Length: 214
Image (tube, rainbow, N blue to C red; front, side, top):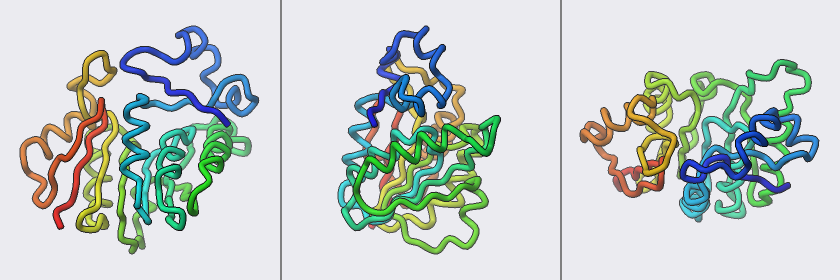
């Protein structure tokens, strides 16, 4: 299944009318449009590159699965990708076309094993005991929710591992603003030096990459 990136430094892959009319996931399921990502091509490439060699990966917030597919394409062949999303926004839960599109799209990635966890992130962390090579936080964008995900999941990232935040940086022509929850949290916590043992190693458009000290 093909996919498209909704954001490309402010320019949509589709025309705005096209995106507006065909935004519902059922259109992707029916083949009227590709799966729709919410990141730039540069961010997509960075996700795939950062996943290279990772054995245990966790993504919080899956949507139509475009970023998850990038991670799966880059991860180790025997790795495991845990995808956490309640898929609770569907009006018809029994059909849940966003979940269907995501599962079909991620399945095409082909590498490693995918474990779907259909829960909210604060529920999924209960009982978690896996060391994580790569953590990608892209769920609830409220500032307090971003901080909650960080505090709950970051302790499991192994030394030398990475944590990535989407929509956490401002960039020319981009869609993020200073009021975005991930931007506010990143400014308050990481750019102020409060995250002991972590350092910013890369910024790609709105994507912020941190590495845990060895």
